[in-house]
Length: 494
Image (cartoon, rainbow, N blue to C red; front, side, top):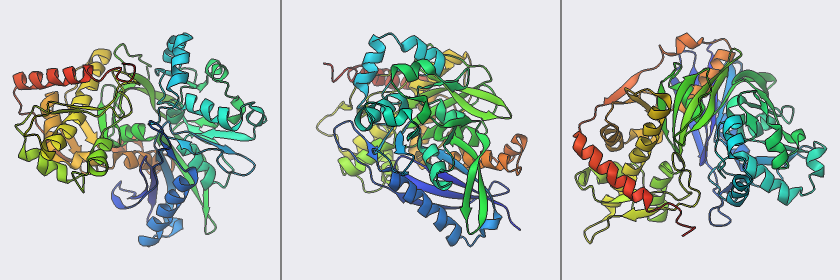
């Protein structure tokens, strides 16, 4: 009998189910987009019930369309959009508010209050994060202020908080499990990543009752069981999407790094079992929990990456498919005077400016759609260099190559420009679904299918992009990018 592992990859714009065999080969994918809600400028929401229904649909479709028996599925792994926050009523199982998405900026004022009250040092040292509307903690407070201002329901344990992984396990187990893993907990701004427990001081200052928090386990754990056709299928692995991609890229050694190009763009570097705080605007986060050990990572978060290409399609309507940007950029490859700073939701690492906004610089009369498309792709590479520069300073190591994954890495122009602007080779794997792959790896380890040492044998490189841009040109372009960034900072305050 065959043995299969299914990764549930619940992302910001779509839910996916990905089928892997016991050799680590990706066999099939089912995907379904769901509704993006923008009730006010800077606000981004999802319907939690639609998140679940879309995820359940692709899971069932994957099994049906590939003719596999549920008895052949040895484990489920879950990876998810991080920081997105859901609060629901335990008695009814119904959300009390739409999910507040990681991109949402409505709690910027709460963050300003925390900074003025002097909590930045505690947040950094306990949670590894910075105070920003990006993280879950202030989102939980905001939802409670609307749905349970007196906190009576939450204090009685009638309300439950969870990130998307928690919500999916709750639904898969029909309300039996309220759990999360260390990687997702580390993104809430409520979790002490040294003590590996919820941080009482942050719960108190944000007025969040501990009774509504999930239990926290290592990334490889038995999180619960999904019952289907009389068969119990265990959930053995959970990790937030970026940590899952780090694991999927087999970045197990200290100093190894990957960059994921998704809706946002996220670079993580494994720093081993030592928590290392950043002096250069990066986050310290938990990479994964395995065998009663926790590995840490430095992370740089770019809020808008693939979403900028979506803006070209849906906002400016200058493309109909993301793939068109490669040819457009190639046509004007030597035209380097236009810069797009896609700070649509502020700027993440290393700037952490909630009040920056997007801009286009260097427009002239002969600028057309191709230049805008090229500059948008270039912005992903420039932002990645911003993070790599900070990461190398913090870690004290020089990165020799960068592993990449995510949908945008199929764009050969972007990957070549990324290598050029970094000055190091960029390695694209055969399976670019590293996020789902990481979730499958974690679940497979839990199910006894693999050991960690087995996983490197599965990894195969599709293409290595070598830098060809002269160093003088690289420095000149990067300096112009820095000028563009400076002119977008504190835009709203000004």
